[in-house]
Length: 489
Image (tube, rainbow, N blue to C red; front, side, top):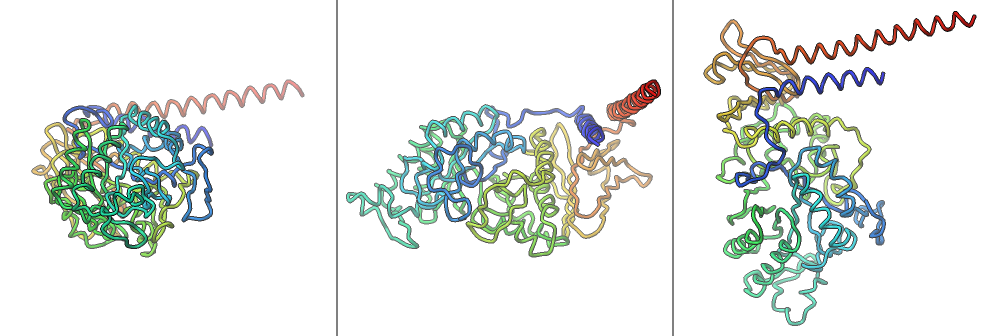
């Protein structure tokens, strides 16, 4: 049985390798002046909920109470670098790290001191450098507002005029006060300059005017080259990406079930800047919760949603635990401790799809054209001067066929399916008939049709030679064993 699994794995590796022969590859998360945030994909997590790598900072932790600190820390992030890296993410967004009264950083008491549950400044810097060595960067949340009443500024008698209000047990700064603005800019830029992070996500920005936010963005970008600044709220400021909470609602409603109205698919993609595209956030209920309420199988639904989102133009933002179908309706139940012992089928799917995206600049930045978009059936192309891809998303309840023409793909082409290993050639009617079973995403590489795929046949022959060799060895061992048994009788 183990040999059979080894044969299957060997075959899959050889065949996948041959599918990329002749395709120009690019380095994972390549660096250089041409790199933009549109090339990135973001893995969004909470340090406390990910992995406990060190017991030295487990101060009054309680893994049985979802409202308490659970023990996740910087050491845990470093321990799981390979796990995140193999899924293909290029930015890891890890929430707010400042001293806080809550596990998710939503009650910060400082803009300078790091939360002791997470670890030391040295451990944090070690995480940053370890991820950077693997061409990944760390992004950190910086909350502009809604802090703890025990925040160091709120307790300073000289800063009482900085406080505009106190609601829901949190302090709101007067963001029109120039002293507050200058202090926030100084705190954010000092943090960015101290640690070699790749970006900051500004949160709780609703009461801040655009001019102030733009000044803060400019100051942050002045701390180092290639520094990203994004937000998790809508804003007209000069952020590197667009954000809209409606985006998650649109894609969640399209993919939570089959045969859903997909007419709003393009709405989040209409801006000049790349859009953060997602199916949920750490502030909302989980996509798994929605799909389960539809009596659908969440892992299949997640494959449909993530398979499409990684191929669409924009910046995919995926919440930790999506790859294990983490459930929950509201926090803290949506912020479960990560279970690393779950089935890896969905994790492997993310690895495969993101591997394609990271190897192909066209899948990240190429021209985007929709061919079909009707009630769950989506076909679109990503094209550049170097290559062309066709992505078919059959999010319907039945097998679908789409006929592509030489005008769309060119003459003498073939479609090489990467995930399902299907090959499509032009038929007698002069079209490329692309047929896909229900609830499946396929990514086709458009290539010149040169007849037999020699590398593929060679790889397949090697697999069979290995198998035949194994059979011969077993037969010989069997004969030898019987001869030895006969000799002892």
